[in-house]
Amino acid sequence: MPHPSSNLSKERTLIIIKPDAVQRNLIGEIIKRYEQAGLKLIAIKMMVPSAKHVETHYTLDPNWRKVTGEKTIKSYKDKGIKPHSEDPYEITAIILEKLKDYFISGPIIPMVWQGAHAVKIVRKLTGGTEPLTTDVGTIRGDFVHDSYQMADTDKRAVRNLAHASGSVEEAEMEIKHWFRPEEIVNYRLIQESILYDTDLEGILETKEKKVPGKKKKN
Ligand code: GDP
Ligand code: MG
Image 1 (cartoon, rainbow, N blue to C red):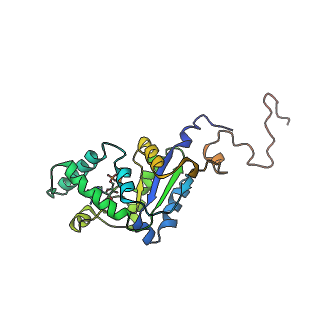
Image 2: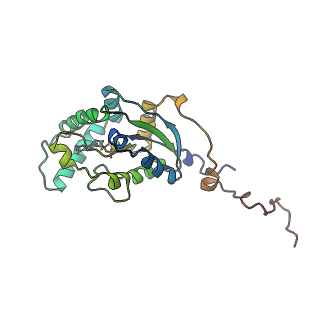
Image 3: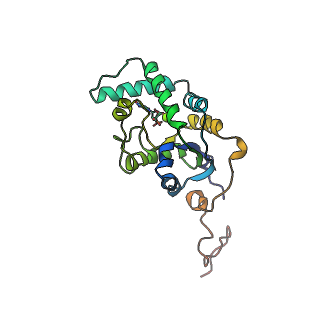
């Protein structure tokens, strides 16, 4: 039976298993974590993207350059390190070049996952951008230990295993960027009954079906 929050349970998010996760045999482990949380996989493929496709992905949000640059400057200052520039755009231009090199270095696996609060749940399971400082129990916290300091010293992107959309709006733009509509499969999973349905009739084989208005005989 449809439930009042049925639109919420259709929220979608984009995840990309990055080249380092593929090389470290973490594909199954990463997918398992989203699956176990009750989310539904509705699109998946393996590919090697072009540098242009990666650049467009990161700049779909016109604020990304500014926000990411400011975030990077702040993370340096919080650690008492002087950033190499005070201009967020200059910082992001370098990060973007490194991200392109990283993403085209080997196969990646873009995926679309669906479920209630999919964007927030996936961000929580994936962890914060920097593996060094993110929580244990998250994908980035459990399986890698890279840091901004390591990445910047070696002039490369932070290797943090997976990309996950940051908001519902970002997710919708990113899904369109990586998947054609026909690559996304709309289907129902049996488990959605126990996750979302309001009426849980039918689990117990012995239970009599409720007839509205009919009193139960003793
Ligand atoms: P995410 O949403 O947690 O992946 O983080 P962002 O969208 O802010 O950044 C995109 C990607 O850029 C991250 O996953 C990192 O690989 C890289 N990145 C972000 N901030 C920094 C930084 O301060 N230094 C370096 N080297 N890479 C960064
Ligand atoms: Mg992001």
